[in-house]
Image (cartoon, rainbow, N blue to C red; front, side, top):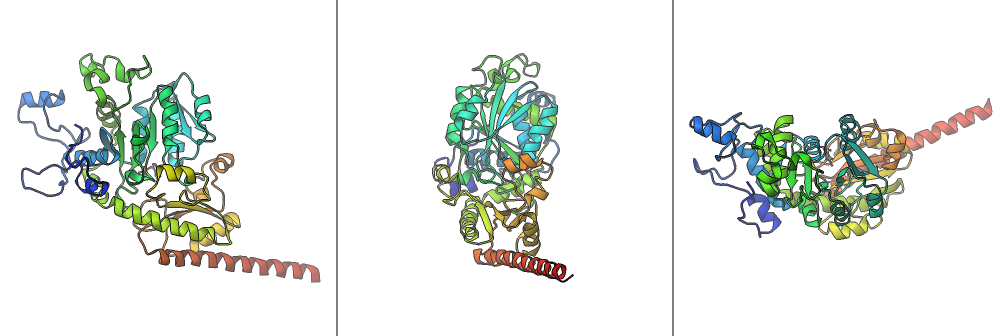
Length: 454
Ligand SMILES: Cc1ncc(COP(=O)(O)O)c(C=O)c1O
């Protein structure tokens, strides 16, 4: 069910409003309606049998497919340059389903060190209990380390295109080359970059995942996730490496997923097994909202990236700021990779470390007014988070420090507000920190003075 070829060669801005669209023969509705129906009626006995067998066109039950969801799948596959896509209930569901569609108990996965904290917990806690070992690469820029840590049981490599929240940019082509030499696929979480800034499949990724709750949706209203399959990985090349896709399967009358579905094998497995049976189905209402969001994706991401760069540069000039993690800055260690992979901008998420650690960060956090204090990114509104006491609080100190999540680190997700208004709000934060320091200094002076007169 690949996405239609109409407008394939059009520019991104055109495709984000047209890719994958289909005509509504019944009423001529211009946008895909919300098909809020649990299941779909069969005309007769034979049609029910044939739809279940995949031999007749049409939907069966929304857990395994729905027209509103399918329109979104075609659009995202089109924008990422994938063969096909499957939408699921959240970004976490997309990660779970994508990795469990590739690996099983006893398998090994290599992942970049600096990744979204929820993904890290999924990998080290939840997958660990299932017998899947995920190992974290200390220096993801070192392709030699990726190569050295491969094992005979390694079945996938994983990275984020732009890491949340430290902004490291992945050397997608380099990591993909290591993966392919070893005969394993590269899975890339492209949430922070979006397909407007980078399309990992063009650089060798085999599967791309998104939290569609962020920039794709764009307005903080709906959770969703998506798995995009490039359709180019050869699952049968290494005998026995991906047996669930290459061995005869009863559900396919003795054929394997590769034999039955060719370059759709992985997507078919997601639709029929990991997605449909684990069951994290996306509500068609959310699919509709995400589709609406995607139609303005390039406009939002362009504007948010340029405001983020302006704010990052401004933060870098503030005396209270120790460092700014924004890949668009020349000072960021990933800047060379930004120039290579992200020529349109480095996205809307940045982090900065304020002098004075957690004490200063908490005063700053409470003083801002326009920035919403929230654990979310990719919204039209600007958001602020203190990772060390929230999203990353459960990690041990050493892991936090390896991920550069210090007490003074604050993460910002830049929205669509006027940059000057945002800067004024951040100034409020710094002013509050200065006042708090002055009060502390006075308190200390008083204590010292009182101590010396006693
Ligand atoms: C990079 C990344 N991947 C995945 C997720 C999880 O997405 P969701 O919240 O939609 O489950 C997040 C959430 O913040 C994220 O930032």
